[in-house]
Length: 439
Ligand code: XLS
Ligand code: NI
Ligand code: NI
Image 1 (tube, rainbow, N blue to C red):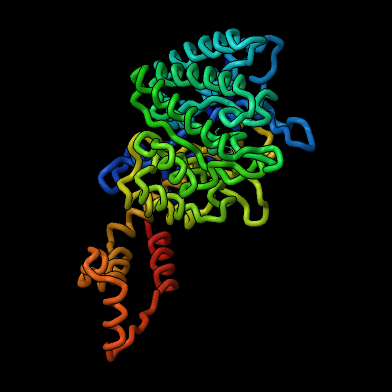
Image 2 (tube, rainbow, N blue to C red; image 1 turned 135 degrees about the vertical axis):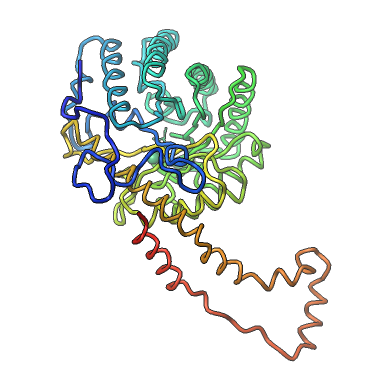
């Protein structure tokens, strides 16, 4: 059965002048930019949860979307149908990767054993779909936050039985991700956080999380999974305080528990916004710490302080992020996953295409602008110039001078340091020029 019959052929690149809403204007997969094809730079993925499992419900109302694949009395048959719809979509969109939670692809059974069997069954089908279409798995993840058993967290739960259940679930999902050739495995700390310190022993919970992640890493090596383990920072929602607040907090945690060589980060744009950071800041922080992994590409809202998960629309915001990604050498195992959802009134099936096409074009144009800025070199030259004094002054950083010596030298000095312009507005204009001119 064909679900997206309004889209009769694969989405193709037609160039910036095209008015065809079902064509790419910027994403030209085979075009080589800064030594790599756009396909290899951007490594786009569609997420299963928002695009295929969600029917548009929110806390105030029921589902609104036209999603025939969700209907059906038999949960396993419905899951199979949903997977047909998903792979039909991936193929028509020409998106090279997908991402899932274990319980997006398979229904939960009455027991863990039953659930595991459902996941295995669906993973076998996914494997056949991947084989047939050439679509690859960017990452898998376990849903450790929806079932009521996880209301007080998974690894950070006060009840060790819940920890054990979560461990079993991750072991199974990691096995499946490995079987499907996943390039990464993600852990978003869904409810790893707290509501009140009145009932929370933070120290215990962090130790539990550290132990949990060590077990995940051990399991990864035991089964020979070569993908990257990624933590996805988020400051709050659903818990009031999430432990994986932002990249800096995750890095400190990884160092404290001796995990910084093993685990990297999956940065989500909207989560960066919620943490009070620019997206580019989070990428730069991860690059500096050597833990940059992957991106959940989406967008927040200037006035709404929750995870609204819009599709990315701001070329400027994404250009600033892409500059940091390219400066750091680009993706290795990671990619750009559209962890993004339609607005609740976008009820038509083909709205999913328009959303992804817009997101892919936004990111492709941002890539072109960022590559053009870095190739031109003026921005980096200006940045280097600002620090040129340090190139001439090695002694301080090399530890050859004391605070007292600097004090004495300053007392004897006839000159005082003077400032130079930071040139922010001029540099912003430089970025704008590249965005305007790329073709
Ligand atoms: C929620 C997260 C979630 C993860 C996967 O805010 O973004 O969707 O990406 O569990
Ligand atoms: Ni999110
Ligand atoms: Ni996410």
